Image (cartoon, rainbow, N blue to C red; front, side, top):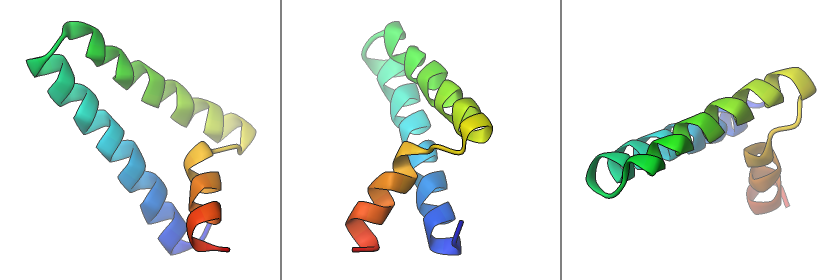
Amino acid sequence: MSGRKERFVRAVAGTVILIGFVLGWFVNDLFFLIHVFAGLNLLQSSVTGFCPPEKIYERLFAG
């Protein structure tokens, strides 16, 4: 994975986690489940090699 793509994936993961935390804190406790989704996605991408943010990056920036 290229440096820019890796930074993009990490930025997306960090943003999802922070948004989930803020929504869970201020809106509803169920938004903390976003952390579970992000964690499962990171785990499955480490096993399968398929990462949705990578595909988004390729469509947006690597035309």
